[in-house]
Length: 209
Figure (cartoon, rainbow, N blue to C red):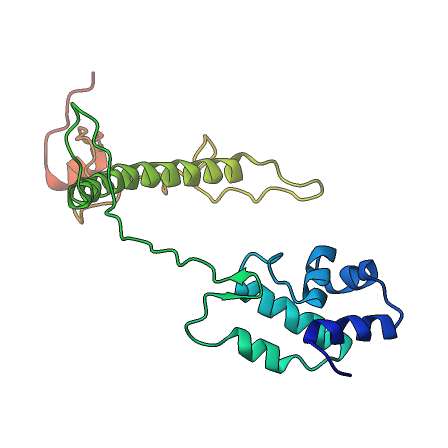
């Protein structure tokens, strides 16, 4: 196989019985670009880098050695090759970040925001702790009340109350207050008359009412 790289690509394609649309469908290269590669005209590509890339894909697909053409397209100082030009370099200049400031409003800096948020968070925690404590206490009281008021399951008799727990039938001794150690006091009553005892001690008998 002789001739230019374009002629070699065209002969290889026709030798395999492939049409330009067939190759375009497989390689995802447009038909205009395939025809340009076979004609040695790379002006259908947006830049020389694109032309080199698609030439490598097309030549690999057909099994054609295009390394010489690809190396020629990569020579330093080259600005144009068979109609394809180097892509212009895009120079980006650093830009300062512009923060819009609304007139009439004070400028708020990150340190100022942080100094305001910390006291607000601390105050919020102080307000939430008593509320959580009260809610937990009320919930505990409600659960205890529900356990006391819950009816006994069917077939289970309630446990009898211990003596002296309350009511009219309780033991009066158990309802007494604890003693301080002194003897119980009783109301003073006059002695009953006893004639036999009075005769022994020689005491005059009390008048009979």
